[in-house]
Image 1 (cartoon, rainbow, N blue to C red):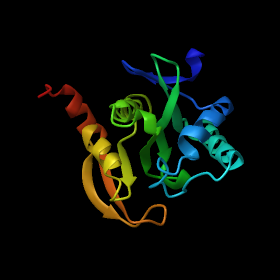
Image 2: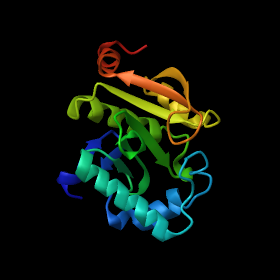
Image 3: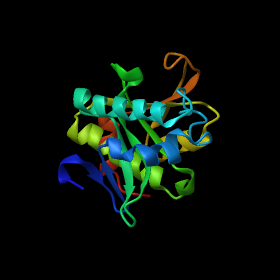
Image 4: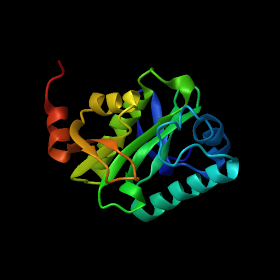
Length: 185
């Protein structure tokens, strides 16, 4: 793995740029899995060609915006277990959102929160964003629990994004900096 494409590391994870070589695993574990994609507005990829379009979109976003959904790799095994990252909302902004998808076999082990927290740090410390939002279907309790765990605050509900009713969470650079300087409970 080239250091050039590593976005962040955590004690258990490597977050790196997605490549076309990731397509088979992303399709099998994420994009083609109905349960993983259950609350994602774009839905499950019906075939690998559709998943390839997603991967190309993510690669394009990184080139264009310097941010994207990135591959989440388990350090202990080298396995791709999901994706997580920052994108302009609906692919054009101006708001920037954090998003994540994790393969079912790796749910409820803290990996998603760990990756999302690292991506927030990249957003504020490297990309110098002022605010990051997160949105999810109100029924997706796993997602909004991650948002809360990483320090985001519920800002309400909205129908503004992706043509769906969703919960809206956010965190500002100032709030993020304060949370990092506060002693842990």
